[in-house]
Length: 480
Ligand code: FRU
Image (cartoon, rainbow, N blue to C red; front, top):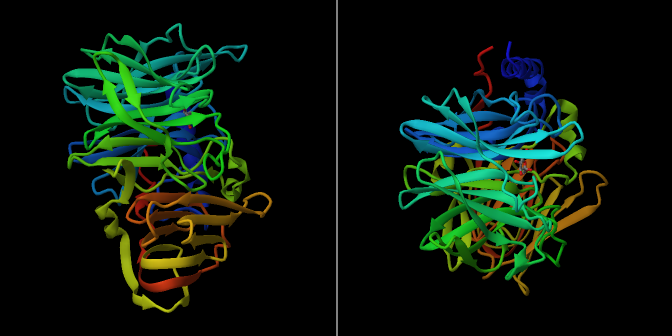
């Protein structure tokens, strides 16, 4: 049996062994994507093809830790009901033996093509990086086509996460990189035929205004245009906290500007964090068949107390965010929950104005919409959101997963707080603020039996609450 086949078989055996225990965990999500067992990280290969949405993910089936990643695969026709599909990529070839690392998908000549990084470590632990291709005729079974792009001289082997797109009839690929001076960078490649790739150089890096001293590695770059601007999303590593900014171990954010394709230069402004919560990293976007720019993120951060999370004892760790539509509003990215998510609603349980002190009880899969000025919201005696109108400062506080001490993330809103939209899924909380101007994405390890919701308002507040479905992902569809 080939190594790919052997590893694939072992991964299915792990799933078989652990799925039940994983899914019985009271923290396991009801409508978010999570691993059937083991560790999930970055969203990969995110695309819609022939009506079907495909989301692949970095997956370690053998333990709740990082290592030689597989590409797991979910599909959906409506963005609310998802199915776990057979494994897409297995790290069993010489060029990806230490992991089929992150990458992206495109459609070309009626095939779904996955570009990903083959991660290799030699016997002394030295890293090698290969940008590889795999193809599929049906979107579900993939054959590897090997190495497409070798590591150029100007970067260290921290060179990964190809994102490919088409512009004016040519193909482009950005890769997260580290220069020989150990600065984070984005490398650009160009191709006319998807076979020969020309190195166009570095289009942005951490030693160039307006991003000086901006980290030692930039992961998961993604470039797209939105309302006439070019957006570069990336996840820099090595920034220090600066007041209410950059408080997570690693960041995720964007710059706006213009990518000059003929000159291969990107003139852009300053970096904005895309999410203000505790767990968010490595987002990836696609344009769907309706022309919407939709983002998925990983609801986790590398090296940020990942292994203190209590789900580890039940054999799984991490989940995806909900899919969100991106819009450019007044020069900033806004993120909006998709209208399709209304299909998650099982029952409307509250509708109307609330008193200045509201106390209630809600399901662990719930959606809450609040219009008006909320002063304080406390969920499950665990997550507390506080608004300070003098500074337009919104702060989320929770007990640290390891020592229980309070920890906070904050952001300053561009106008007064007027709406909150919350999605609660057992152990996660996504808060969309002022129609997507800011989002706080976080895991929430509250006592699973706690149902409490307490709200203090600072004026008239209207509230709607829905109980949401609790089983929209099917994990049963694997071949062996
Ligand atoms: C980001 C990342 C990527 C890499 C992948 C490996 O979380 O470190 O740069 O491709 O995870 O799982």
